[in-house]
Length: 128
Image (cartoon, rainbow, N blue to C red):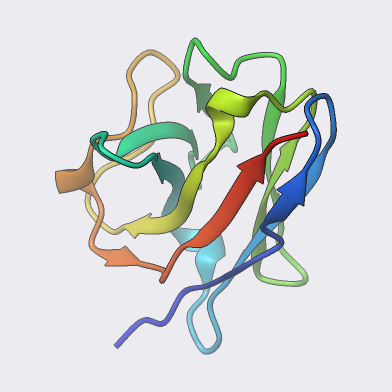
């Protein structure tokens, strides 16, 4: 069983920054597709970013492009989501997910069915 552990969420003021981390003890993230999804109250879970294990190419949703950056630290077996210029509408539970069959594409958002393993989620609240 793959366990994904997210951390780094919290309360931040508009315009602030947070860095989310996704670790997978005993499982090598470097070989697999990793994505970040988010789910706001009353809304569907949406894929905001992913990173391809073959060439580290990435995808970003329109609403987050230019503000969020996904990256991989191979030595630490961790995937990060750096979030800058945060807005109240970024408030959501953020989930890390790993997919074993599909690859991240720069042209299309990650979809829930493409991902096999999920973390427990970390709350991000952007409010003054």
